[in-house]
Image (cartoon, rainbow, N blue to C red; front, side, top):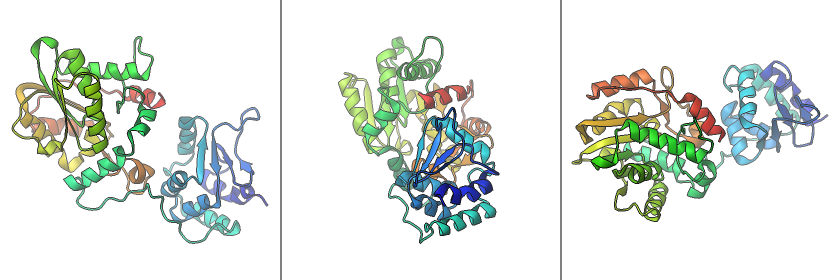
Length: 357
């Protein structure tokens, strides 16, 4: 009996029939559709350890551990593959008792049950008070301090995180990110004749700060608590000849005191703040902004708000402690801090295209 045949009851319990994408097993057997004789999007189970991990951590976490450990590979068009799996499992990756029982039986029959395998070393479980300075520093380091060469592969030459702005003649990721930076600068009212002072909260690798300084003549202070971002941002600023107008600091925004700025940008940092900290966050920023200054806060939102589940792949491996806050709650928090909200814009479609790029 092949591995695929042994796993057929598991797929039937999970998907209500054959899997929506092709699954190839470590013995060469396979289940699932193929297009014109070609495999199409494929999940490759490379080792019995894949099944063992899923049995001991049913659902998304076990699959995530198998993927990080190299026991599972995903081939083909990744968005198509993940969408097909998501649409076929309405319980969002959780195995019900029938599917889990089928998986245990198959693992036993294949000699793959055994004891739990240790989690891959890349997995993180943060300790301490949620969104305290110390815990936030560990979460940020886990997410960003994984090597700037890695982020060059993902982000391209622009070294810019968060969604870009597409449209018109914009075709490349670098141009789309520059268009996003330009949109931010215009909304903040930056212009060369005014010599305005900008604070960029969560400045990343310095791209927004450099754009504001070189295209709008702003004097910029960028802050980050990622050591690798801090080091590379300073290198990039010096290489661009902008060190007379851009200062990058290794500092938590909560530690900024005694300064005033004409404008504040926060791009893709707000997801790290947390619901319980948003009053403090906007209060600190309001205190740093001159009375007629402007704040632009750019973040991913979620209807009703959501914390990334601690047993999810994203929560353990990618974005620990991340929170997506409802737009309405963000606006209300801004108003309570003394801001007048003048404009809200959704860039959802632009984010999807950015991820593709």
